[in-house]
Image (tube, rainbow over all chains, first blue to last red; front, side, top):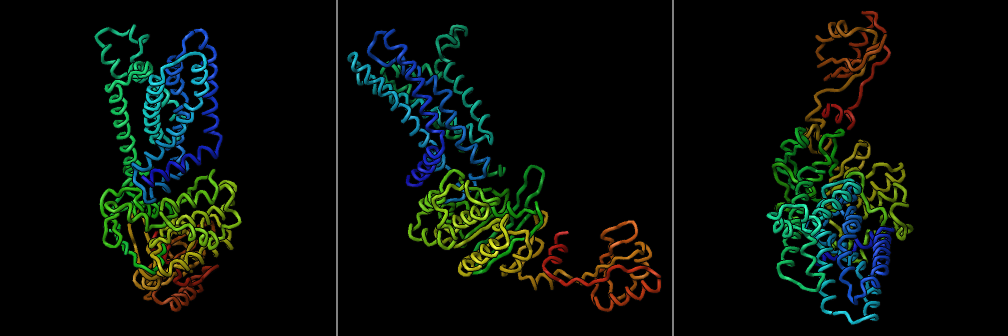
Length: 240
Length: 304
């Protein structure tokens, strides 16, 4: 655990010693602010559901912008060799990078607090529902991050890692969405809703934490962790 | 003791290491020599656990590296090829990060910064440093935690002569108590600090031991360089029968002069015979000199 924390600290130090973290959090806050201020009075509802449903969509672009450098930059600069020859395990490296990105995602969610305060001022939103949605968003962020890491560890080029991660996340999110299902034969709906990340988030955004949804997120994360770990072994075999 | 046993590694169809075995004893500085692409970096990467070997094992004090990776890694100080560093970190941040991961004493880190001459640049970002300072940061990183084993892949690359001698002196000093393996292309620096040599060529160990032992074992004769207008056939024809001459090879050719490499068991007699034959045959001799069996010749002959 201590070594994971050391790697997380190192990653965060790198994020905050360059403009990356500030830009990513700033852009996120700006988009959230614009979206919220435009919609809060139109909906005339004292809750953040629409905003919560919007966040996973903008994260499709924003989280890969964070994760793209995680391994790709280390591979390009050769620093992965420094990291992997220290007394740390591959899992500690992956978890360290994962948590550092999750901390940034947490900071991004903190920028939604003014929206939460505004809604509280205007009405009386369900706190339990809001807390569940925040928890759900952290789960979504975790899935996005680990997918981004799995792509990043397979590429020396950050831009390629970004494009592939965003593309994959978009497919995974949209595959179970109602608009997509409309053009797909009905017999495939159940499986597509099962695969689709967005479909699993709908009930969470409403404040319902269904164990099936949580299980889905955890399964996707474990599977992607395995892919990342496997890619590490590939690097050690090939000497990338 | 570090033991590398029957290690082989291929990159696709290219053989990087072929059944490589050697062992390194404590308190000895080993110079790892070989031409570019000989397999030095691959061997070092396998010895630090960064790369997996296709076959064979690496063990430290009898413990298998891959089975005891964490324990052994904490005792290895490694400077990888090209010295990769986290450029946008400050020197002190970077060293502290490594120090934390290696679970070492912070006070030792301060001493190390002084030893490596880094005190004036501790607050600077690594990307602001000159190559010499970056190399010192890399070396300091390798020395954190006072590791028992030091594996240094070309530690003096890109340094000016003063920086080189400082770094070499540092390696020499720390090498008194540790097992040090360092690779280099610069034979003079290997000669100046290495106690023993491991010479690798085309993925195979071609010689190992003290330079004098290797010379005795592998170099059968002394090289005489001859530059003459004589053509290869007549040069060979008139000299091959000579008892003191083992072999004659054409090493380069120009319009008027050829350069021959003559290997001789008795260079003095051979040189006189070559001179006499040249006079008799009316060849022009532009050069006739005997080369001593230094490390450069040893390297050249073993890695041909």
